[in-house]
View: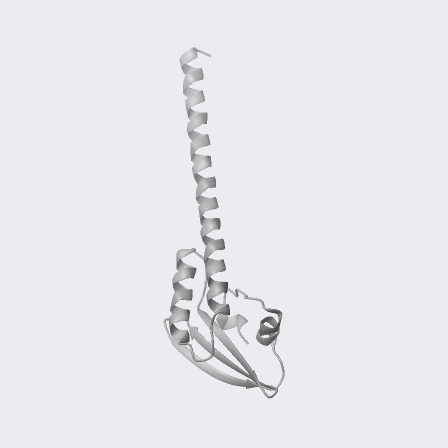
Length: 133
């Protein structure tokens, strides 16, 4: 092997390592964006108070999901109010086809969403049409 061939091979290896490093850095940045978006979303959702305009929060949720490059098929916020043993679940959702819906349900017994609420959990579900009760 000539010195020139060895140099060419070395340069090729260096270029391959640079490409790999760029991919790793890109993945790390994406992961950082994802974690930051989730942190902001959790904070935003936990600060919702009765009487707040949830549409602004839902819009911000959609922007955060897009910014963090989180895959989704619709997005929304579930607000839960408990009064005299009655649980009211209000869902504010943007569907994949661009439709928007708001639904209010009176729950006779706790469901999975109210269980998460009682546990203080913020839950990401990729497909609300299939995963939302």
